[in-house]
Image (cartoon, rainbow over all chains, first blue to last red; front, side, top):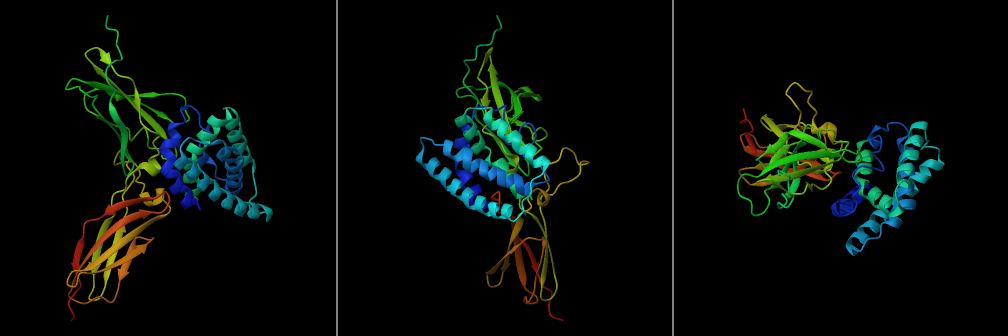
Length: 137
Length: 213
């Protein structure tokens, strides 16, 4: 699924990132890079997948039907990964920690610091940051 | 009065060209301008508030600027921007798209080392290193950057033009049961599954298996 997400995102990355004119803020990398999170990776991955499903995709409608189709394909892939992560969580295999909780709180604060559409488009444009981080483990 | 009017046409096609994370900003001269155009360059880390000037690329007449040092942290993403000047006039700043060194770089083919016995060929592959500021700096192989890095290896039996393909994750391959005294040519490519990246194929390295004693 991550590979499928990556390839779908690659086709719309330039389009989505061009819609994000705020260079000075990042949802995932501000003020510290997501890559700095070393502990509680499973927990923050689960939280981030929930975040994207609950708060991002639904606010990313564009006038471009091709882009919209790719976004819904990514959203569907997120849903299937989200379910797997939920199972891990229910089996206590995806425990959270202070570091990941603080990072996720920061991400939510960054998101809520912008209007919904800008925050959602920016978050979607940062999907490669999330994927780069996931694939590093 | 020396005040600059920004009515000069903009530089065009401002983009990063990256090989093994040597990240060089390139652009084309503004339309309709011949010689004498000068440029300056700035860059920014995505998510950080400020643009940073690149002094070595101030008032330059070439149409490229090496920003490898400034963009060497591949856990960050970047923008760069160029402005043109000519005869007291200037252009607007023209920006790149967001540049992600990890996914937007091209990778060189691996180095290929071959040796043979009577009935086998041994192949050792070496992935390129990530760009580094100076020879003294510690080398980082792209294998360390891309955990999913693999190699596709092609072996051609010259006599029959028969070709075999192998896909391996580690960097050594021994091909057994070959015909003694026969020429084989080896070529290899780097392949990263995610993010999806692949190098070209290396040039062919030909070697003959030893003759039967």
